[in-house]
Image 1 (cartoon, rainbow, N blue to C red):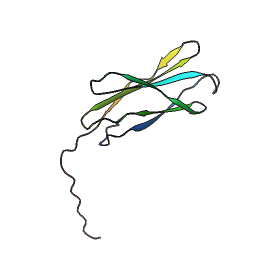
Image 2: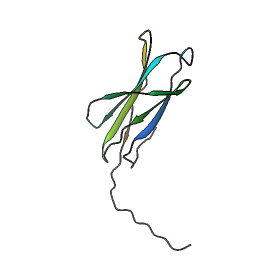
Image 3: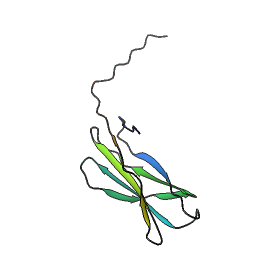
Image 4: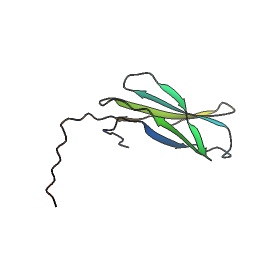
Length: 102
């Protein structure tokens, strides 16, 4: 999955966490880090049923952004998603836009 982007703003993220019942209590957390920084854990909020949402923070151009999600139930059973990453691309040349009136 290629998520590289030239946009350095916050990116919304949703996760579907399947439990026995859609009202079961579960702690879903988003772990993110920019570049060589430390991992930061933030809770994801239940939107409805099995769907949770969170935000991947913005990062300056040239940085790599890494993230993964964990879910833990009341019995302390935890599962972890694969880790994902993408780069915030740097602009190499100024943008030139030509319009010929057509």
